[in-house]
Length: 327
Image (tube, rainbow, N blue to C red; front, side, top):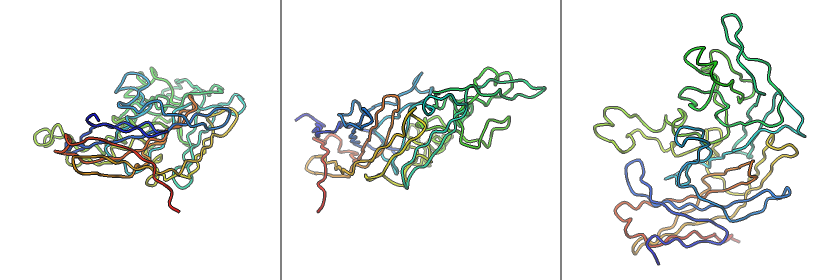
């Protein structure tokens, strides 16, 4: 048996990685993943293709829209629900306005509004937008949402001056009943994908990087670091705690002909590691539910962490096992 040997479990893809927490302590993180593909309107389970060691970006890593965060969070407090895809009109009828909704009973109910492509118009001394063009399919990532400042550095519709604004596209993704305006400070950033670490909604939890941090704490996170930073989803896409199985996921507005529906499996898993003479166990919680409507796939990522500071060299093996249902 090799050092850090991971015993594979039937039906699961399992990987482990050493991480350091906000205090620099070594943590062994185990991630298990399941995947389903939508084939002929039926969800068919298959072995997960990959567990991501690094975030996946649509363009330049670290500065473009993030499609998926890495899957080795030190810990999470809630299940993140994330969606990557496009808005699609019903029956392929051209529309100028469309809504996409994600619903998990008792946890998440979120709708975003998608407008047709528009252009900037100079009107006297002000700038406004043209009427929207009809569409049957449209991108909905953060590059199409309101942004250009610390809230969404990948977005558009916010600039320091008119000339800079006119060089950018008109944002097309908002919350219902919200719309671009010259003063957009009160307009929320709308999207369904992960929040990148350089977005304000997430950086607010990273802590204060000031002179004290430079002199006393660097390269660790600041002392006021909040573990909410480990969450990738916007706050309105984080469940109330962890999904436990049996919940129903419904998604509308992503398909030309149907609502996407999925009932979460109720299987429970447990992680076990051998650390020297110790055997440690921890429940595998559902850390992330991710739907890719373009690939017609859905994945569940389960996670568990073990503190190993000063003992990492004693780690021998890890295994994820399915728990038997209690009678």
